[in-house]
Length: 227
Image (tube, rainbow, N blue to C red; front, side, top):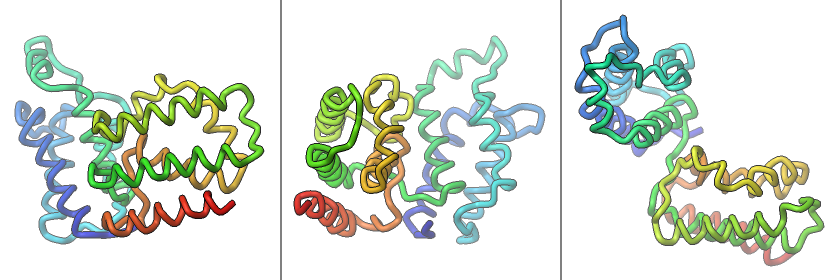
């Protein structure tokens, strides 16, 4: 886990997106989820602005964020408030909360568009690893390859925005292979990196800059080609 200026600025950015967007329609009170979320985000934002937010943040200090995200209470509205939610994209609100959790609770670096070329490179490395291996992936192998190629296309065309965990049902072979490939140490390592980048929206701690990502991803691809 790392503690960077990038993460500090991202925390401020994503807190502001909720505070100045969806949550701007609610009062900061303790008797509603929206009010408690405002208090939580204001605290995170203030600490980040003051350079006083070591990462990862202790779980007990993120109680409101984690609970409200898990239960979905942020969308609990009175009838007269329904038009508020209609102004916003629920999926976007979910992603913002996921990113704040990744930054604070996980202490992670986020997947961003400037890192997309290196995700494509790692997908190629994963395909190459499986093609050269004797991994037993049952009847999911070819379907898995097709889904990886589909993900590559979406990433290249920038039609995907990690984290895309909600899209998992669209990749049934990927889901099945996830459990099988983790039986193989090398496959588990590479699959986990790709999985985190795309579906969890988190990049490796060593990918501090695109230059680092270029070097690290090329190293992994070279290792697969030399096998």
